[in-house]
Length: 403
Image 1 (cartoon, one colour):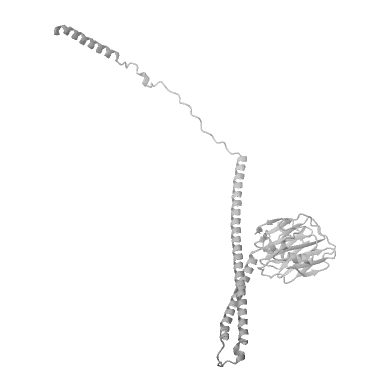
Image 2 (cartoon, one colour):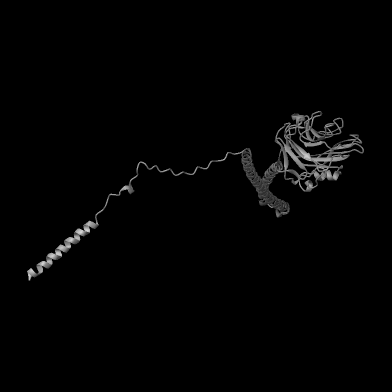
C-alpha cells in the first residue's frame, strides 16, 4: 500500500516545487528604471517669483499738517482735562474749607447761646441770694451772731460770683474767636454774593483786561462801580480807563496812595477823595463808584456806599466819543500806534477786582448804598452799558478769572 501511495506523494511534492518557483519569478523586482527619484544636472527649475513687500508711500505736506493738527488737538484736550481736574480739586477743597468754617461758626454760636443762658441763670440766682440776705430773718430779729461770722447765704455768694466771672471770661474768649473766624471768612469769600473775580497777580504792562461793551459809549452821563482789593497802591494806579487815540484819558478811575481819583475828558478835570485805601494795600474789599453828568459837570466819588467827594464844572457839556478802548487795570499812553506798546507798568493794577458795572446815568444815593452791601442782593443790579458776568471781558497776560 505504501508503494501505491508513493507516486502520489512524489507528484504532490513536484507540484509544490513548481508553484514555489513560479511565485519567485513573479515577485522579481525590476530596478532598471530608477530615474524617478533622481535629479539630473541638466534640469534647472525656475524659481517661483515671490510677491514684493508693501512699499509705504511717502507722507505729503498735507498729511504732515493733518498729523500735527491732530497731535496739537490731543495736547490741547489733555491740557483742558488737566485744568478741569485741577479746578475741580481746588473747588472741592475750597468748599470743604467753607463748610468747615460754617460748622465752626454754628458750634461757636451754640456755645455762645449756652453761655448766655448760663449767665442769665447765674444772675438770677445771685439776685435771689442778695434778696434773701437783705430780707432774711437775721436782719430783723437780731440773731446772736459773732461780728466776724457770715450767714450761710453770704458764704454761698463768693463761689457763685467766681462761677459767674468764669462764664463771662469764657464768653469773651468765644467772642474773640468768633470775630477771628468771621474776619478770616470775609478775606476768603467774595463780597455781595459774587462768584467770580479778576486776579491781577503783579504790575506789568502785559497784564490787563479789555472790555467789549454791548452799547456804544457815546454818553453824556455815567456811573462806574466796582469792588477792589489792591495788593499795593502806588502814586498812580489805574482801575478803570476809557479813551481813544485823540484823548486816552476820557474816563479814568484811579488810586493814588490813600486817595481815589476820577477824571473825565482829561487829567485837568480831577475829583479826589482821600483816606479811601491804605498805601500798602488792604485785606478787605473796598467798594468804589464814580459818577458824572454833562449837564452841570457834576462829578462825584463814592466809597462804601457814601459820597466822599464831589466837584462841579467837570467837563461840562462834554460828550464821550464812541470807538475808544475800555480796559481794566491799565491805560493807553497818548501818541502810540499800538495799544500794548503804549502800556505803562508803573500805573498797572495788582490785586483783585470784581463786580464791575457801568450805567448810562447817575445812580441815586439809595442805589449807591445798596450796591455797597457786602451781604444781600447788592450784586443783583447790573449795568446797562457794562454788566459784570454778562459783558465780554478778555484777560491779557497773567490776568485771569478766579472763583
